[in-house]
Length: 242
Image (cartoon, rainbow, N blue to C red):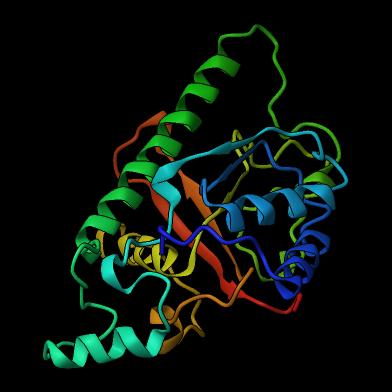
């Protein structure tokens, strides 16, 4: 939850370093993190392993905090399940006293995602306002190569020099928490009709990511419009680096 702001354990630091090595060839344009300590440390560890953007500023945002669990915070998951059972409800839809409902968490996720879309649109407008300005993805294509590129759609930049490469105005790393991210992905799927990998099962879609699990989404904003973003999920809760 939010109320217990503990640092990463030794295992957590190893996992964050592994994620950083996995993403070391990805050039991020922006990094956002929850303002809780474990997420801050994870984001710093990932950037610390990066070839291109070690010095990129990490921006902390309270909208990325884990779900608030009220009276259940700092207690074992078994206690939360027992509270839900006593209330005649199922986890994770159960809301402990003082906690956030799933709808409230999703609203935070929606608000933050719309903020990211606005950021991308403003970047595009700024770039187009400069005469002869190169696209943000100019240069070697390896700067945007993800470790799972062979799984990617045609929306990935091409390595050819024909000028057909997709311009990436923003390539954003977001570091958050398991229950929050599950709600955010649920918003993508149910509200924004996100396209999912063909081999993804329903149980995988509803599961909480492992620590430092990585999900990759391609967002297209047609003609700089914030309406109807087209979202493609390349991978969900990837954990091969662990």
